[in-house]
Length: 290
Image (tube, rainbow, N blue to C red; front, side, top):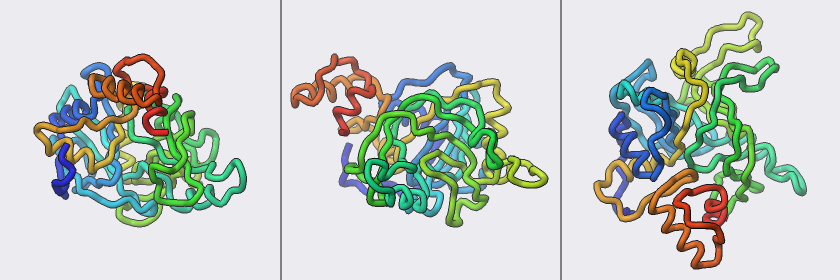
């Protein structure tokens, strides 16, 4: 994939664009056709009000600063060929990262993390901060995944320490109605702009903002588990703008010939001693990134 071409400032996400995006990252079409599928674009914001389903949504690049919500969280209705998208964040807030980095010794960096790009299939209906005053209906993470911790603060880089485990990075409300205003509540979870219905208020109010629509769509469905593709908005724009990519971008969970080729390259270097499966699983990802 040519890297010398300037990335488009804006790009559109639609049913056909998401089909191309999944194929471009070598991620198989998830589940049944009538399942809802989640997508997250790190470093890109939706243009327009998140008031319901659209046939197409324009995304504009937005540099990550760990202070403002600069990501897109979306829902893809494959059966009806439509999408919904809202502002949110896929990175932890700066305050939480700095607090974690200030810890001493072996626990330095613990308490904040940034999820690696990938395809995840385990987000399930449940409650974030269950039993606490801020607890609210959300999607809970239940399986292992790769994530990074930082002992120096932000930004996260390829040299930030890589971990594999369950950091409990749920998908919940970000406690900020305005996606353009600073501040959001995350130490690593994926969050959507809005205010949730919870017991923090003396008289619990309804969900507000983009989260109200996001929550309503998910909880109106009988579906319990939701697959999620998380990628960088810049890489997504490049995939969608290219008719014949020179290089296939890969993420944790990718499958196919490009992954098999990666496994063979890693094996030739002595970094990977597993079978050539064509699946970018934990063993392959660790050999590739760590």
